[in-house]
Image (cartoon, rainbow over all chains, first blue to last red; front, side, top):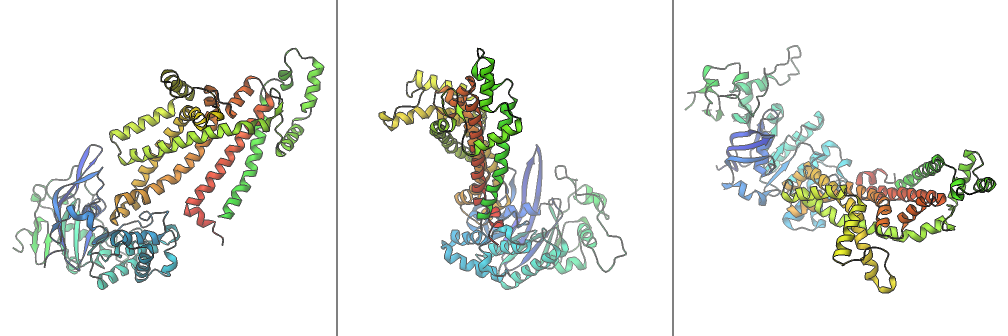
Length: 320
Length: 318
């Protein structure tokens, strides 16, 4: 089966007050049709920029794509993205309050998508808007379309954002930390909503989060990123059973387990390295508990093990 | 919305009171006895005493204030001593000139300021942006009287395109009036043009960096639609407040402009009043200007509420 989206060796370069750094720095992964891929990593690992690069929305004044390519249904996405935004590929952002126009009614903000892409009139578009809002669990959508973002609760705003992204039944939905700005209870509802979307529509999802436990509830496969690079790609069940990369292992063991309250909360020693002057060899080696001599000298390539990929010298020679 | 307007109107009352009080106290604080000043150095002591009595200056300050308040509230701003006419009727006579001048200047400021601010923001860090930013700064820094004189020298004396001074003659047709207002409006408008351009630029830049603009791009909207419907509408909301406040500055600037271009407006009246120590006239004019300022602010606030749904909705009848 051909992948719907294929990101190959993607590099985005930023210049911030003279310093240059890359995040993502050579990132590759694929999304199949009808698949949900979770992209996990700490803040600053390059997850959001990867999403923006796919959408062609990296702010020109700050960064630019300097290497690699992005293919959508086999075509160079950077050339065609401007025709696909909102229809075939859409995006949900982290903070729904800031991501909605404060001075425009929600209904209008949604209907303009249909007006733009299908040339519908407002009257026709709003019927479809109400329908999608209802599907996504917004109560009394006929009334809610007349309201402004500040009159919505946080959870409802994110539902409206998701409705906006789903209006044209996109092939790919990118969700960048869609639950991070929400209360825990609302977070659970939104995760539930994504599960429902995944089961009911044919839309592929790229779900970005710093929280592996959130991603594990939705994703089929997980891509783990660290300091601008991918360190492990694995089906979601296997990654919890047996994480391969020491970083993934650290992420999983630092998930709070409510049943074992007495044990001290685990964390990964050290800090995320500066991307302006990244460590040599494997970028995780300064914090790695299982580092070897080679780790600081040479960057590992991908080693495959069954249907998993891992970028760590520990697995050299394992598999093929 | 009606509740909001009503509330804002009630708030005007204490403001007005304090304005009247301030104007009264300022006139009290000016050194020298107005009666002595008005009657001149040759006046006899008993004439001064009688005049003081006439003006009520012999009574305690509090009583004087209450008397003043009573007169002001009935629309009596006193009599001008040099023109021998009611101050209010003098002001109303001169008002149309100043209002025309201020509105023309504001019009110029808006028509030039807003588009150049938008262009500068959209072409950020370009040569065009630099040009707009520098010109705006020049516009804000140039003294009105100097710029006015430069305009006169260039367009009236050198090129002879436009008249230098005066109001124009209605019998010579509309163009005669319009041509007399072009240079003064330019001179007066340049300050506000700079302010509005700079403010529009920064407001637009701020909005363009907002997340909802990114959302609009992610929705696949056309760029023109994003700029107009999403960016500009939001960016202009704070600009409207600044434009309103400019009206106050323009009234102040009119004093200089009318003097340079010899236009018989409120500003010229004020300057004449000051030079000729027409105490009643100055007092009346200061108060009148302050009141205009308060009402302009009121209108701006109401307009702001009208375009900002957050304020509008929070006062929606419950």
